[in-house]
Length: 249
Image 1 (cartoon, rainbow, N blue to C red):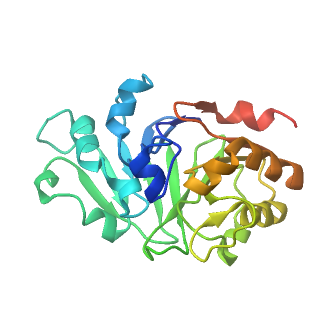
Image 2: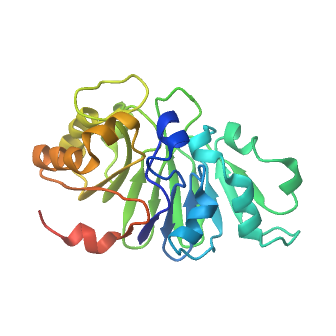
């Protein structure tokens, strides 16, 4: 399983300043899923020379930094052919954002917490969140070798402490010292990781305050506190998941 980051920024200020790109990321296995195509996703395919091919798009929720480029990515996925080609899935409030114009082009799949979806030889199982968009979803993506949890935007809550993925991609908008009610901070991530012990943590979706502190510095804080290899993702970065999991601190 390979991860390709088209943007590692998140939140209002990072989005409109583009201190980090906000194009989401891709999971590449037997099939390819683009996750949360925020502003600049389509441009960053060219910028980072990622192939413009995927069969699935996951929208975790309807906020701008997760959904802005959905229509142009549908155009890319279908290559302008007015026939069903590819699937977009997510909570109903996100799927309802998609223009009816594309109903003949794509399959739309509404999912909710606890649902499982087959993505060719991968599966996605959807997890709950606590966020100011109450319909937001996370997901555990699994292939024959590896499982990875994508947190989406959320405060870490009790159901998350029961998850046991091999790796975690966590949207960490706030640095050490913050305890927000509806999103993740470094302190919350440390608490969660000490309990669940994934083999690898990848931080991304950085807000302004975390960028000021320095993502690499905050990743090192998590790694030092938990003993778990922790990466602060960069725009355009490619992560070969199994190889990174095998590395030791």
